[in-house]
Image 1 (spheres, rainbow, N blue to C red):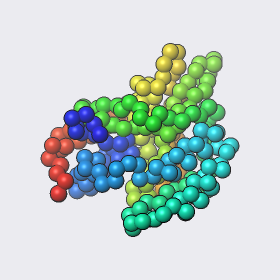
Image 2: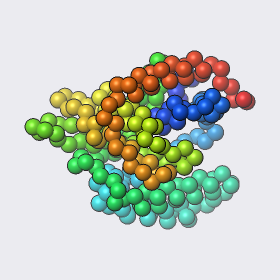
Image 3: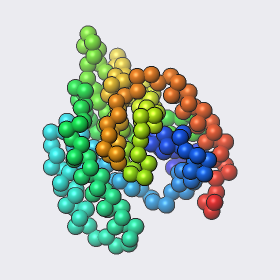
Length: 231
């Protein structure tokens, strides 16, 4: 929750919001302001996929283990069963993508569980990269970046929305991760969209995209007080 219940949004939902029509935009903001599900919908898939990526894609056993545990979990309500099956589908989809994922020579490590947020025009943007990548560029210069995994099948990314996520990842890496003499390695700030089984490379030009993010967050801040739970 953002402090004082202020405007907040995840980076993936921000990317969707930027291409959404007015009605869908309000629904996204309502879901962010009054979330039905307390916790991460793709919690199990996120954990298994992150661990696999953190191993440099060399250890995939956690994927099959996670699927087995999910299959054995007591389903309970229909919504719970749907969520468990969505996590299974996501893990199996990611497993089918392994040959298409290139970590660009970076050394992966798990992202923080409760990382700092970025703020644009008073809107807290939760970036929460699953993986931080570190490596070296030309002349041995240390580089750092962050990659994001997108799981939703109801809104899959395209080149434009993935470019927005990548731009925000690069800003996040610059503001929240890089330290000392590290520079942001833009090639490390790419996006894996499990829903569409696509890997989107890092955005090469981010200035215009970040200006669009600023403008969208300005709109979100203005809309936020008008969003009610019973629309």
